[in-house]
Amino acid sequence: MTAGNYWLALGLAGQAAFGMRFVVQWLHSESRRKSIIPLAFWKLSIVGGSALLVYAIHKRDPVFIAGEAISLMIFARNIHMIRRSQQ
Image (cartoon, rainbow, N blue to C red):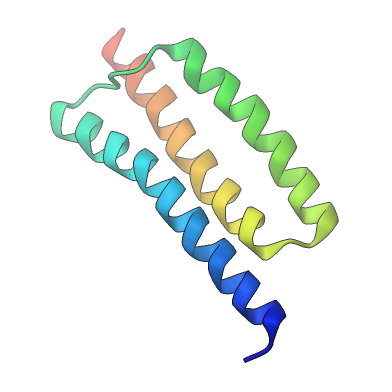
């Protein structure tokens, strides 16, 4: 394994650990059938996450591409749950 592969593995591990906080929040919200964080947080997350995903794709960085793509799905799901609970 080259030094570059070690850095890639470290980056993926860090992204996984960081991303798990959203998975924990998502599962917590799912179990209660509602999002527990304000809508504005999720809207800003979509804007920021989309910009970061475009940047990551431009840089061809698989660590950030994976992290942002997965995060955007969770952000969108939370917005869906908030809107559904307001109906």
